[in-house]
Amino acid sequence: MAISFFIESGKNGAIIGVVIYFQFQNGRMNFMGRRFDTLAFPGGCLRCFTLSYDDGVIQDRHLAELFRHYGLKCSFNLNSALLGASETWPNYNGKPLDVSKIQPEELQSVYATHEICGHGLYHSSLESIGAPLAMYEIVEDKRRLEALAGKPLKVFAYPYGRFDSRVVEQLRLAGYQGARTVNATHDFQIPENFLTWDPTCHHADPMLMELAKRFVDDGEDNAAKTTPRLFYVWGHAYELDGDGNWAVMDELAMFLYQHREKIWFATNGEIIDYITAAWKPPPMAAFSIIPARWM
Image 1 (tube, rainbow, N blue to C red):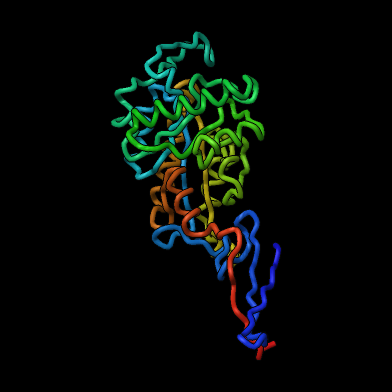
Image 2 (image 1 turned 180 degrees about the horizontal axis):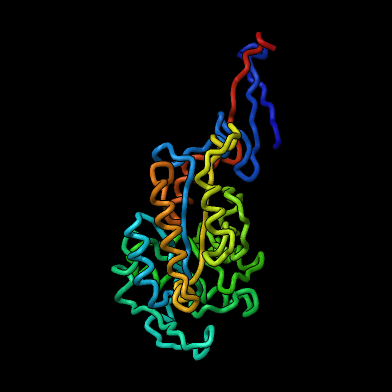
């Protein structure tokens, strides 16, 4: 944190006060009494839960409805050039698995109450295909999905979870405000950079329900009771078919629904909007004027 002092002087040159400016970094420093560790989500909640599912597969139809049933909100990450494609993997856990994509005309109905997000035009590994082609895949995918969704896209998910600093900058230039990785944190921290947003865990993580219980538990520590928590689960809906674990998602959704009075259920984009509006300080802000007589 950098601190700057500016002298305020009167007509006769006498010092009448000092303006102190604080330079903030990573949105973490105190600004007019505001800090991330004192953040409250809408409704006064100290817990926020969000989901992110990739590829726009036909299993999203059931998953999106399951989430709506429990009041959960999900960000669905789609590859616009692959929408409507039919595909079956011949051997997923020893049996064929239909991984066909939903039809373009279904987007607004299937993902109603949820969020449509980018995932690259063809699901290419963006850091390995070269800057010009990567930028085209990002921008063209965003353009097509925005036309289908009827609204701007705010969030992206890195195909295969792979990215580098160049890809991050390309997303920023394309107008994205957030992008999900596949790196599990097993914690509930608010990210310092939403363009490299690490989730808490995948839905197949053996710690899933343990994490869910820790998420809602008030505990004995007073600090834990007042610290905001962000629980982020991701995956692919076809895995729920192929691995036969729809019951896992039902269990998680029902458990969180039972604690809904203390949780804000939100899409990735809603979280970014809220935190950015409520807590992101300007690069330089005047803190106070100290009269010279107090010095």
